[in-house]
Length: 279
Ligand code: C2E
Ligand code: CA
Ligand code: CA
Ligand code: CA
Image (cartoon, rainbow, N blue to C red):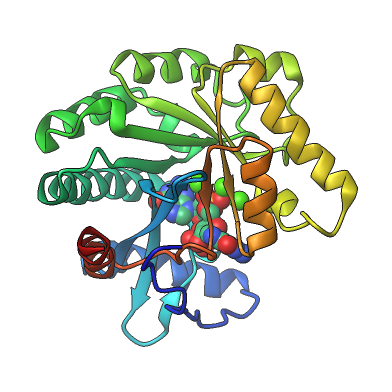
């Protein structure tokens, strides 16, 4: 990987099992965090598997607590979803990510694509499409370079307006990716009807490339299925050359993972782009 610095390791504080009271305390802290600008948007590159060019990046939220340090989204996103805070936090991530991306597109004259995670609760909001349209207008981002990631486990049962909303987002020009593909219980018929442009192969399968022939078979089958359905494929959790080679050789067009780069703070991401521009 070209000049992306593989050693920017990031450590999280271990957060202990929480009691009910601790959860409420954490919820309060999360509300304060939002107000006090303790939330950050980090960016992890997605690269073309043939050229290793950066084609886009995923926006990943971080919580920089003044005393506790970096808190992992794996810990506080579930809480944000349960409490509904994800709606305002998610909108904030979208706006910041589009702003940063537009700035980098201009500075480096690159058609960088930005991927933003959408939570089920955001999709339930009747005004989501309006919010996305406003962010596109305010930031001037090209909507075809805005990719919205929706996890495969999202269900029409709990979100009756799911298909219509995703289609409305596509009508704005946005792209839809099915995140964590293979970990849910979707039928092939559901996938076929899902208004999506791309599939993200989950890291649980990528991790076992070179280890478990069954998982390798799933990865190959997913790539072939995606292409048959005219969907793009990106693999996440690409950590070693063996993953990279396998995925590239089987036609997976985009890769994301620590092998190329960790999620970076905006300043580091921009420096990395500047560095690569010089190469
Ligand atoms: P995700 O959407 O599946 O994001 C990919 C996760 O894999 C990220 O974890 C990323 O840092 C991690 N990752 C990337 N490359 C590698 C690798 O090579 N090896 C391994 N082991 N992991 C890798 P992160 O940043 O901790 O985020 C965890 C989850 O939190 C995300 O999973 C996503 O579900 C959620 N999340 C993060 N930001 C947002 C957000 O803005 N909105 C919503 N709704 N969810 C978010
Ligand atoms: Ca994602
Ligand atoms: Ca994922
Ligand atoms: Ca995942």
